[in-house]
Picture 1 (tube, rainbow, N blue to C red):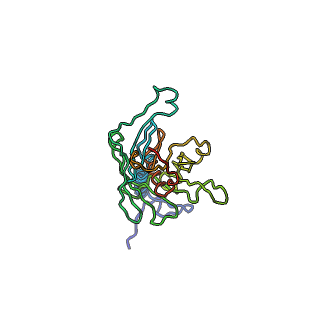
Picture 2 (cartoon, rainbow, N blue to C red):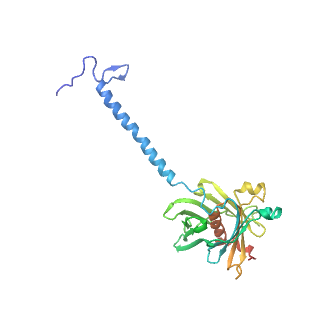
Picture 3 (cartoon, rainbow, N blue to C red):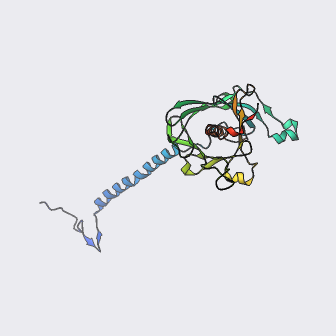
Length: 278
């Protein structure tokens, strides 16, 4: 066997207080390998961060009117139509010049649903167009064929894994009068999945309607802090056979609120509030 030759100064494995001594060429080669190895994780981390960012839930679904209140109705075919936009009601009392009301739109049906069926009650939701911005499409479905909680997920139309919002009924209700009886129906709307616990809307049964708040704390602070109201109405020829009435304040995520209103209607929670309205 041929013996390896090393510089006279030291051998490759000369022991000096237990430390390994390595010649200059070997050290340069190892340094190069270490630099290459160190450079790989940041590239992978950046790629992973990019993928995570790509799948982040949206901050809002759409149809946000920053300046005016708006009123909508849901027809029996589950199509939402806009009926009016208007200024703060108290402004009309103070000054007629500040009172704004508009009923003229290039189209009134602004959110539609198409049922595609299946065990998860899948639906395709489309909203927007014309005065209301570009058309947008999302999927609406149950997370499970049999749900312990009444739950609906709002996801990308092309990818069910990208969950933007979750609409869920609070099991058992809230503010029960005595021993779990006479409880009020209530719902939470989460950004992303429920396990993230990021609540963007909280709906609670009121006298003859649901009132929707940013969260439970806003409701407890003042019942007048509501963002939107949802009421069931009796369908008539005058109201276009509508079954729900929705009023939304400025700056709110109207498209998401419409889907929450639909979920309440679908569960039967709004039926007890049915009143005659035009």
